[in-house]
Image 1 (cartoon, rainbow, N blue to C red):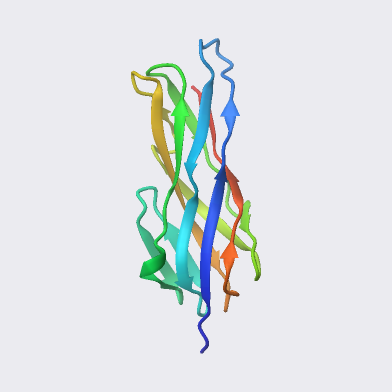
Image 2 (spheres, one colour):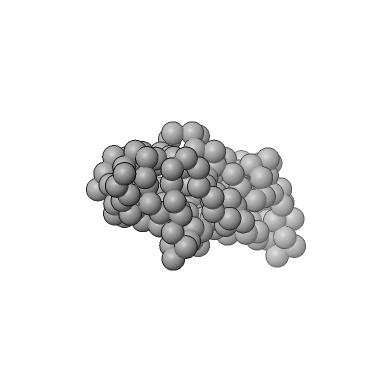
Length: 156
């Protein structure tokens, strides 16, 4: 069996939405760090998952490489003090990473706070972290892979 090295990184896009409920300030989201699945050996394929807290795990025949740790995406949400908001994450198979080999898709996006929503602080901001599961193909070609994901927030 031949193992190939693959370093995988997904970059997150920022989204800004205007509240439609007469709030004094619009709600905004700014990307401060991209979602990274780190380095791994693809082997016969499987998955690499990164939780919103940044914990990374592998499934199937994927072997994680310690020197290439994964990171959850991080966003800063700003708006009216103590306002609540909802979070919309991408759907399964919607985000694709492209690179030197076959495209890979990301599924099972999760966030902290959860997709049900968050609440801004008295200062009008909150950190939002997003993780997901990357589906790795059989003998995935080595190299850097990148893609864009959108996270949408809106006042309740």
